[in-house]
Length: 389
Image (cartoon, rainbow, N blue to C red; front, side):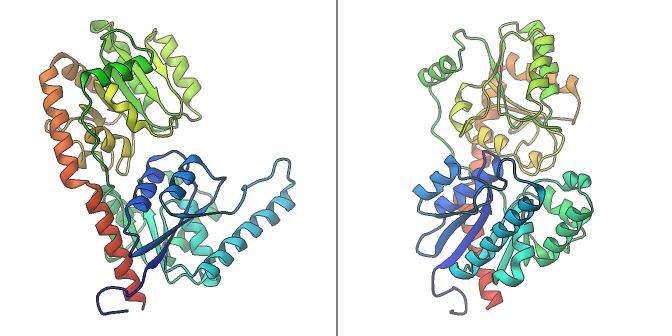
């Protein structure tokens, strides 16, 4: 290796599930755009292969599967043996493939990579932080112990926003010299014209000209869909033609559907999980995010890239995308009244919505462009490999 740049292609591996989600979509974008003359990219599937795994293969990445994490009806002792076999298969794969870097973004990935590192012999381990660490408060003794081992084992921790970096330093006690901020990247789609917008609305089953409020994300605690339902019930008192479209799935979905019915939201659509929700943003007049905690929400980033007016809670790294009054409107977490007022401001002032959407598109192209994201990550890989060498 030369003094500044490795003299060969580096072998990069992502342990991942590639289930529909913001972090997984970012991981796939990175794999698709890393320069092939400098990097050889692989995924090791922690769950069964998905359509996103097939996308990775089409982009030229190798995809290796550890098999199903659990076999139906398997007794606990045999399940333990099965899991141990998966772990050993992972370690053997790492030794056989001689990866230079394991870039593990989510807890299961970096826990597996850290625990097996002594036998997997991977020179560089990067651990990702894609969200605030509040979810770890539910960890048991074993999970906390594994998390501590993984934290110490990682050569560097990559946070996807300043808010997440501060959280890692303050709540996890990681020295800031071991934290690197690399913000998510996004590709800006072509603007949506009126004909395309009408087509998208028809696909959603919306045939009139009523405004469409979109809410995209998994249905789980802390995502705030119940606040969106409550806000929309108020919005419809002055805008009875307004539509609400939910995209996503998860354990809280039945409860949110019941709440929508109880609130009389007959013009609500629940689309379920969509492999790539970016194709739907052009149908929305407003994108709403009411989360209690976020790292750097991919949904908000993609909506901004699409030029959509955004109303979002000031959770985590969201204000790094939505600058209140400039690139969108932010409201306090858990404040249904403020959420309602912000949605109404945009619905009742279309010029404001257009200005916010246009400014959001320019902002994310400058601060969150895919080229920057790839370049910063590629430079980190090469820096860490050279440092190890």
